[in-house]
Structures are given as structure tokens and as C-alpha cells.
Image (cartoon, rainbow, N blue to C red; front, side, top):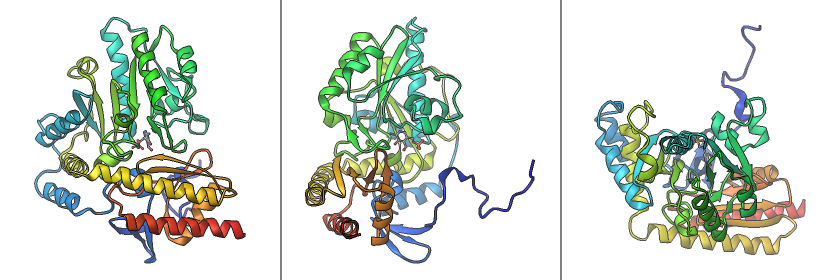
Length: 397
Ligand SMILES: Cc1ncc(COP(=O)(O)O)c(C=O)c1O
């Protein structure tokens, strides 16, 4: 085996080539190492929910960094108790478990589903149903749940304990539920697959099907939660409640944190020793996340997300109507917007970058626009101008 290869970087090449290095940011903008300024509607893929270096978060993080970084869960962490209290007050859940990423939050939910049935004498109920075009992370269980063939290639031994059904199709879900099913996982607004909010009627039918079959429903709100859709959790706008919810990304405003929330009936089976995380619930992440939650739930904040989101969506639909040869469709909820393209999405993304706007690729030949939740109307107008310039360049090329 070769001991050393000549390389430009010692990093694993799993992310593919990248040519832009960002050096600093403020609010909705970032600057690259060469000094160019960009309007950032990628926001670390829906992570920097309050923009870059929000003063309230910088203050909380530096204050905590000067007091205590890490203690482990061998000890009480009062700031995590405060966050658990806030999150459970804001939604259906009674209990919270903290971890460090979205995939970990989802994994905890999978374990809770199986444990619930095991503790209720139904240990054969271990299989979990995932839906088409989903994304739940990159661990073995989360790739098995989403079953994206590119993500799974070469990694899985069998189906990993997951069955699958078509997103948006209640009949297909009904057909896939059997005597060994533990539960269903779905994103109320699909993200990576191309922004796609679930139809409220579909969600209600999924909830009813789970209740009829005695199985659990878990929502993955890693991307669409924490205000992105215009409610604290997106399902609260879509009319159905889960038993378990995975949260992450925007919860830390850029600091790594994840949370798995659950009803008491499910959570109570996660007894001492059943699960854990060395870094989960650490004081740094918890201090920042408490401030994020306080800011997002401050009076008028979420209303503004909805108003700005509707304005952005409507303006993009106008652009689509005027340029049907470039834009095939626009969808979204709040400030989570997908633009589906007739042209190559990668090329469109490059043009946007040349114009000074950063966005993210999504599935089904789309791009995702994920501005900070406190984006101003002016910044949305600037983004619209840059998007229409990119569209015009394509129309004239
Ligand atoms: C809906 C959803 N679930 C889970 C994940 C995984 O989160 P993480 O990358 O923090 O593990 C993501 C990440 O993009 C996501 O969008």
C-alpha cells in the first residue's frame, strides 16, 4: 500500500472540490479570503439562523467560554435543563435529549421507537418506515432510513431495518405498515430532496394511520424547525403532531447542537444507561441555543419570518412566470425556499455566486434559498435582483 501520496490537502475528499474559503461574516453577509463580499442565503445550510456572528450569540458564547466549557453528563448542567424546559414548553414534547448533530438526534429517535415497543412487550416491532426523497443524515441508520442510492452505495448490510414508501402518498404508507413496524420518520418540509412542504391533509392521514396501527410518528425537523418555516416547529403550521422530533441545525445558530424531543409515553423507556453522549448538552452549545430560542420566540419574530417568506416566495413566483424557460417551479414555507430549474442547477448556482449570492443545491435539479431568519426586506430585494440577473444571463446565453 502507498504510504504517502502527493496531495493538495490532507482532508478526505468526500465533499468534492471546493474553491471558496470564507473568512468572516456579519449578519446576512460573508467575505471570502480574497476579500469579496457575498450575500449569504446558504447560511451553513440553514444553520446560522440569526446570521453570522449575532452579537447576542457571540456574547453568550464568550461569557460561557470564560466560565465552563465542558463537564460531562455525570453532573447536572443547569443551562441544559433550562433549554429542555423551553423546548418542551414550545411544542408537544415532554422530554429532551441533547446531542451534537442532526443525525444523532434522528438516531436517538430511532432508538426511542424500538425501545418503546420493546418495553411494551412488542419487541418484534423494530422496522421503521422512511419516505422517498428524504434525508436524515449520514450515519448507517440515517442513510438506511432515507435509502438514497448514492448515499448508501457500498455502506449497508441489507436494509438496516428500514422499509420505504412514497412521500405524499398515504395509500403507499398504509401498504408498507406491517406487524413488525415500529414507526414512521418524515420531514414535514423536505429539504435536501428539494424543498417540499408536506400537504397538511397527508400529514393528518399519516398521524391517523400511525394511531390506528399502534406505531410511532417521528418528524425530522433538523432543517425545517426552529423558526425556519414561520412557526417554531414547522409541523405546528401543518396540523399534525409527532411522538418524537429531531431538531438541530438552526437550534445552535452555528454552534453544533442537536435535540431529540419526545412525549413522556415514549421518553420514559429511555432509562438510565439506555443512551448517552459525551458532548451532548455541553454548556457552550446550551448557552448559545438558549439565546437562539429566546430570540426566535421574541414578540413578532416568527410573524416576520412568515411575512418575509411569503414576500420572497411570491416575488420568485413572479420571476418564474416571466422566465418559464429557466425556472420550472418555486416552493417553500417561510424562509425555506426551493427554486426548481429548467437549466442545470449547478450552473445556476455558479452564476448566482458570480453575481454575489450564495445558495445551496437541492435534489430534483433545484437550489435552496435559506437566508437568516432575521434577514431584512432590503436584503431579500437585493437577492431577488441578483437572481433575476442570473436568470437574464441564462436567457441571453
Ligand atoms: C432533514 C435533515 N435531517 C438530518 C440531517 C443531518 O444533520 P447533520 O448533518 O447535522 O447530522 C440533515 C442535514 O442536512 C437534514 O437536513
